[in-house]
Picture 1 (cartoon, rainbow, N blue to C red):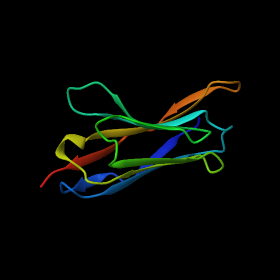
Picture 2 (picture 1 turned 135 degrees about the vertical axis):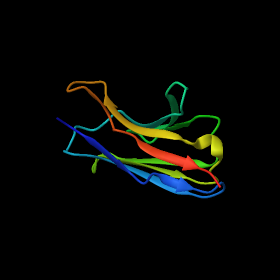
Picture 3 (picture 1 turned 90 degrees about the vertical axis):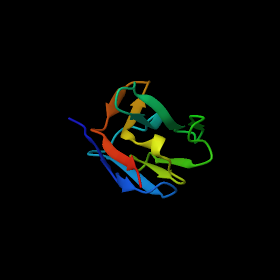
Picture 4 (picture 1 turned 60 degrees about the horizontal axis):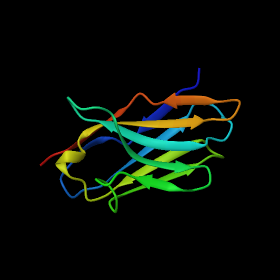
Length: 118
């Protein structure tokens, strides 16, 4: 069973930075989309950022200009650089990789906690 292993979460002060990493436990066929999502207490999971195999990036309005996503299909890794963090960025962050064409897949990480607080 493929696992996505996330790391890099933690506690940071407002204005600080964190970098989240996500790596697959085994080599996968190239993903169509790699992304990060987050879920705050009492809220639904929401998109943070995605990047396609061709390098097209999408960001939620709330993180645009502060977060940067990068994906490496050769290494099956996806990173999220988070700068200028705000308390409202506090959430559990999940990575996701999916492939539409055969062999298709859709894998989620276990989540990593990010807390922004003074």
